[in-house]
Image 1 (cartoon, rainbow, N blue to C red):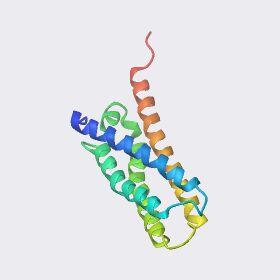
Image 2: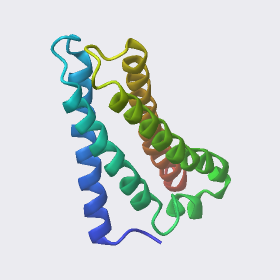
Image 3: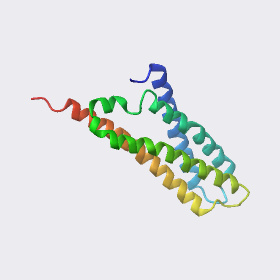
Length: 147
């Protein structure tokens, strides 16, 4: 079952918002400790905590990657791993958000949290890239090369 047009548009909107928020997050983290506004950082993380599960729910609507699995059922294990990462990504983000919230009174955000936020962003980008690559590979396998 594929997404309705309205769900596809909403998913595209969430994807665009996620992209913008990640850019903002990267910019804030790259600022010097004395210039960084931890309240702005927290607002970005709050928006991501709100947006990410909604985006994942839309991706999973009607069955996560069901069109792909209909065409290439042997990819079920890979799809299961990617779907499990949705929960892991959200839990990691919520934990980091809570830790930032607890450090808003500190002058400088702990270097450890900054590194973990950068690692989380890299994990999310890698996850999204693997989803796209899997779709592209599966549909290329399905279509194949003509005679």
